[in-house]
Image 1 (cartoon, rainbow, N blue to C red):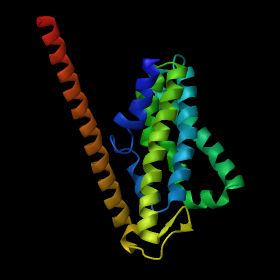
Image 2 (image 1 turned 90 degrees about the vertical axis):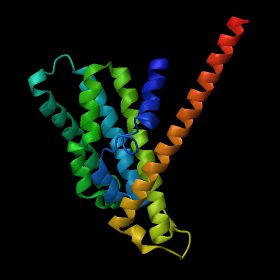
Image 3 (image 1 turned 30 degrees about the horizontal axis):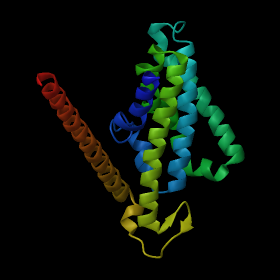
Length: 215
């Protein structure tokens, strides 16, 4: 159980693909102007990342090492094609807002990276948990920044008008880049604070144990 807990926490927090590893920067900067587009891309990535991890893990012993990357791309491209068809049929507005970045999921470094670094070396269950955790970490990051950018740049959240005041810069590429950088800084700062507090607590506990043993 601890193994799955570690995989989950790594994907969500400690190895968050957006805030810690800074992967998938192009779709991130392009889509966080809108909370809806950001959340839509995140949910699509969860679906594709989880299924690709499962399939690649299940086939890891039969995929020849020399052609593993092309095989990964074929699997991911098939899933992306299916996702595009579903979105175009049932969610045309979201499909239009994602634009070319939906197709570019095929070569998204988060999905290819998890396939190569994790799914190809672990069991199906572990790969599934890794895909869900990293997908949720990516979705959380994109949606959070999408809410911030849309609120500041348009005065709305998920298309619902909240206020008339707006800062147009945050509806531009420069604004999204600024929000992205600030969110990374805050995330890392908070995480480092928790880590320092954990080390202090562990050192204090160790000293108390030494004193008990000495007594």
